[in-house]
Image 1 (cartoon, helix red, strand yellow):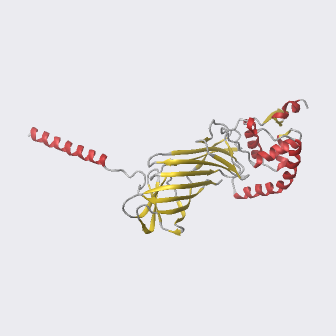
Image 2 (cartoon, helix red, strand yellow):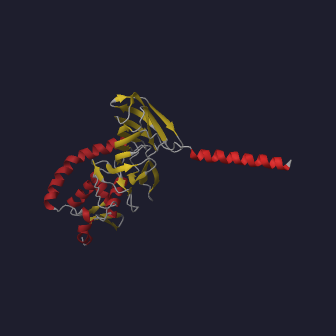
Length: 341
């Protein structure tokens, strides 16, 4: 009897082992279908002050299978996708989002089957609330510390990827860490209100990944659309006056040597419109003035002025010196002269 029980036990263990081994040999669809190859992928992530991100995604999809396909699966490492528009060859198509534990698969249904080696143009427009978030505030609660992170893990081979990350309005890079932007961007630009970073990658295979990270600060006073509109009106009102002042200053002063300052990104210089406005004002005042005069005369909030000056000071462009109950701000090339006054 004992021998019969032992035999049944051995057979049970054997069948369990076979089942486990077989399961390891089955393909796991951890990404998306590799029926297509993606090329000329362009993904633009525009982050807003309210925590949302709007994404424009375009790609050239080629069927690499011998059989025709009637759908295309795209993997996005987001669990919150609000699809607004999905088109193939400029025509609206159905898009179904399947949410998994840490990512989503967007399935596009083709109007006509796509045969071997044929290609189509894909365009998606959607929003998400998972890319950037607040991680804290500074010591005096005047600046919000933020970070934007996106993991790009393709489900199909990707050739010629371009990913752009646009920061919310009036954001400035955090200089409290050695590398606020990772990996090093191939390009950066600004429209005067937003800073953007661009990365390029020649090839990514299924399962490979890149993490794009940007750490930045925003003034705590910018919390609503009404405040943004007010700041824009102030900026536009001062624009004409500052333009004339800038033209006069350029005739009397050398261009500030930003290349000598310590930038947060190696070989990357980003100067926002507010930084330029503050620097022009300090030059107009002879190279030094009080911090109070800056935010009063330029119409900036105290937190905005403090954040701009903190970033300029960390990059060794200006220096604040405490005099009595207020800070005196000096351009570094005027520092010695300002102290003796």
